[in-house]
Amino acid sequence: MRRLFFIFLLAMLASPVFAAPVQDASIEKLLSLTDAKKLHDSVIADSDEIVDSTLKPMLMREKTTPEQTAFVDSFLTKYKKIIRDELSWEKMMPSYIRIYRETFTEKELNDLIAFYESPTGKMFVKKTPVILEKTSSVMQQKMVSILSRMNAMLEESMKQMPAKH
Image (cartoon, rainbow, N blue to C red; front, top):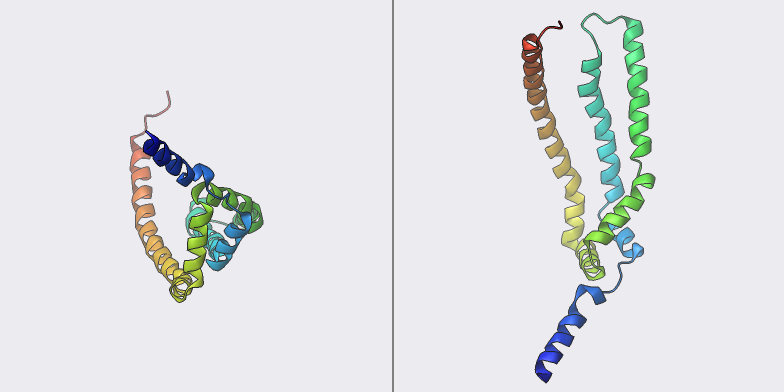
């Protein structure tokens, strides 16, 4: 019985309930080591391209006047500014901190920090933008096909829509 009590006590001491609290400084260090801000900013920049390549064609008509083109361009500039403002690093940082705090223990963060401070971790961070750029290129190519198929489906569906009575 005594042995069972000690096993139970050891299990309780090893449980996450007693783990060191996650420190914001550890999260911020990890985000810094992984160039998270740089990656975040590149995603936001990509969103501009996505808006231009997807939303702009949807708003432009076949015979658009220069005034209409200027209006759409002005609208999209404001639209992209809202995205950049609302998803800025400064506004997103509290969410990142919360998400990392909910996801990792302090020990896990320290282990990740040690990895990203290592030569292999630094190499991984250095090559991550290349991987993301190549992945983004593949995704954009696929989106052209997807949007084409979706537009064809929409046109076909609109032909089949019941008329107003």
